[in-house]
Image (cartoon, rainbow, N blue to C red; front, side, top):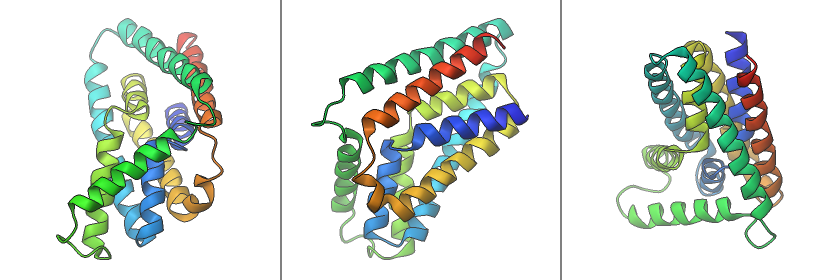
Length: 206
C-alpha cells in the first residue's frame, strides 16, 4: 500500500505542475475567491481520480501478465511522448498550456455572463469544477491513475492521487500569479517525461 501511495502522490504532483488544469486554477484564483476555486477544482480532480481507479480495477480483471506489460507500455509511451514534446518547445510556445487554459476560462466566463454573479460561491465552484473536469478528461494523469490502480491497492492510489492533486491545486490558487510567469513548460514537461520513464522501469522489473 505504501508503494502505491508514494507512486501516485509523486507521479500526480509532478505531472500536474504546469498542466492545463494547474493554469486553469491559477487563472480563476486571480479573478475570484481562491477558496471556492480550490474546492471546485479539487472536487473535479477527486471525482476524476475515483472514476480512473474504477476503470483501473476493471482492467485488473485482465490476466496479470497483460496488466504488467500494459503498464510498462503506457508509462514508457507517455515518457517518450513528453520528452519529445519538451524537445519541441521553444521560447515562443513554452507557455502553450497557459494560453490554452486562458482561452478556456475566457470562453467559459463569456458563455456564463449574466447567469450567475461572478462572486457567487456557486458560480465559482461550478466554473472551477466544470473547466477542471473537462480539461482532466483523457489527460496523462488520468491514464497514469488508471494504470497504477490496475496494478496496486485502489485505496492507496486514491489517497495518494487526491493528495497530489490537492497540493497542486493549493499551489495554483495561492501562488499561481507568481508561478505563471516563472514556470518553464519545457523543464516541467521534461521532468514529467523522465518520471514516467522511471515508473516504466520500476514496473518492468517489479
